[in-house]
Length: 373
Image 1 (cartoon, one colour):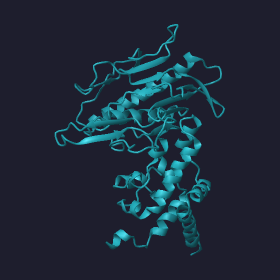
Image 2: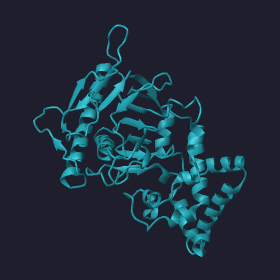
Image 3: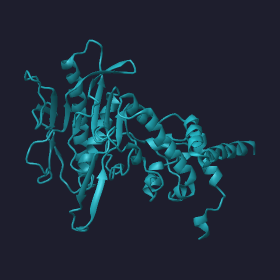
Image 4: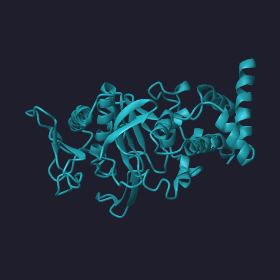
């Protein structure tokens, strides 16, 4: 009985904070646990977004879910496990997949309009931690090792998708190669005034593409790192992207457009996530990598599609979907995970385990308006 009262009290404090004035709400929720999601903090640390704006997203998500929990909860078919991430087996990905979108009642995109984030939030970033005596050649050697393993896992995932009949495409692996990737000069390779190459591009030669799948006539890289340099973040030295509004590219994954090329795009994401288990000291960030296209399948010839592959952060052995911006989920991500890469959702971190439990217990036994209709 006492435990129930405590939990109900916690929820009451939370909802009271959410119903107060904007200033009071911002202050009370900002000071409430938990801390900012780890992936958001990573973007703050590397200077992609400000701490204040990241916290505004967290506060908005907390308020939106608290005030709409009936609708949110009813979208789930049940409480299932989500890789052990959530208390009570709360599968937030399943809940959002059930028809409820955070943007139905909170749109964080409004926070990031204007020149300040115009170029930051439509990019891919990459960094790898290096030692103090590591020069550019050493830094690129670390990049090569990471991309090489990611390419292997990317290829393995696609081949398994074919072998398990998940996709119709016939993905094959070139088993005769000694190295899975090849360095080459991709279109747009950057050079200094003195002819020094400032970018590196890598092709995945391990993968044999199905005939007609690759839509480009110009060879595109599997991964490119543009104009790399050394930076310090939280006392650690990194080699990788420059965070600047002057450059249009910082790093590039060769995305094909995730609506009907989801098997390739997701395999890239999962491949780097798997590589991160071996090399947890690199960070790959994609923000608002979007495609506006028409579904060319025979079933829906007139369907217009707008989708995003990001927003995601790959680090510490997993890929985290941040949902920092609208329409950010990848298509068939769980279905395409043949290599058991770790997938995480940043939205699971916006409440503590105790707060999630309080929200569930508060709503148990109470009648929602929609139930009476």
